[in-house]
Length: 169
Image (cartoon, rainbow, N blue to C red):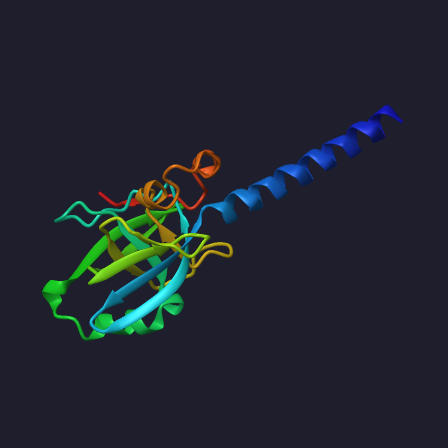
């Protein structure tokens, strides 16, 4: 009986941890609106505190979005001049590749109450693959400062997640 009680308690602890983990990820999402060349995309992005990807010339952070998540803007890459596109090497979970990036005309964040907030200056990277899990876009950690400034409950939720993306040397 003590063994079964310990197993049951362990199961409850795991369930609570998993539920908490889901709530934490939901609490780190922001609605982003990106505009470039007359095209606009509005999508949800997970603030990834492990995202250290930087555009190499400006050293600005990169917001990463799956091509399928922002079709209007990802099609824009085919029309931009070569000097408007950056190709960035990246590494993720033991693999590596290259992604095309562009600098948007405008980028804004919408908070949970619908307020429009200024977003940090960044590039938009178009990821050709699929981001693991439910997420289709990863915002750099700088977005947390803008989206959750002054909200101590939200600031405590910011943590490193498993999709750490970094510059390839």
